Length: 114
Length: 118
Image (cartoon, rainbow over all chains, first blue to last red; front, top):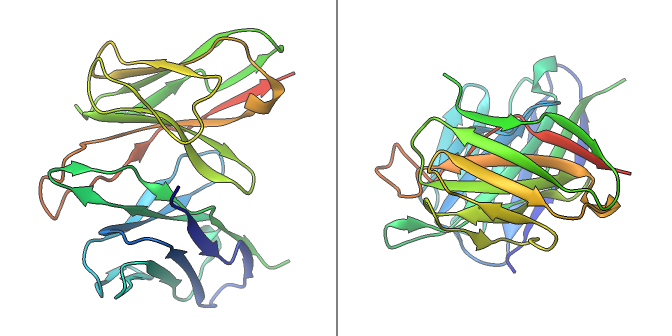
């Protein structure tokens, strides 16, 4: 089946640093979504992307839908402690008026540098 | 403003026991899903439903059954629990149809149910 490769698997952040993570796929999607999961909670949508090349921001977060429709990246600028958590990318293919199932990456875990 | 509610939040089972996880959503969503989350594995789709009375298999359906008798509820059953089913289970729901650019197939997740099978 379809798989998403999300990297890095984990990273440590220091307050104020910029953070980047990305997802690549072997097949195309027409929607890319980025979710964040806080400890003990379910994932919550951060950013949704619908068009190849689209660049969308949500506060300090910026995400882009790759031109090839097979990749996406998420940047977090000037990180703060509450940014820690697990970030998931997800790809989706719409056909007709219905949605295909979301395919999730395995997540990028952000932790604070000791 | 409940959204997606899962019960129970925690459960410990012995191998071979059965149990049912209940998911309820109050957003009138057509689609509902059950995922499991394991360390390093991300979210894997177990079963899903595109409407009342319908169910379909996802990526990892073996050992689970589901039912969608009412639009707002989606039940996940384990008939004979195994230690490999120790996991955190998430229910999610979505509109299922892209109504506009402002509305996607975005999934709304519950808070999760942590299941341990001894």
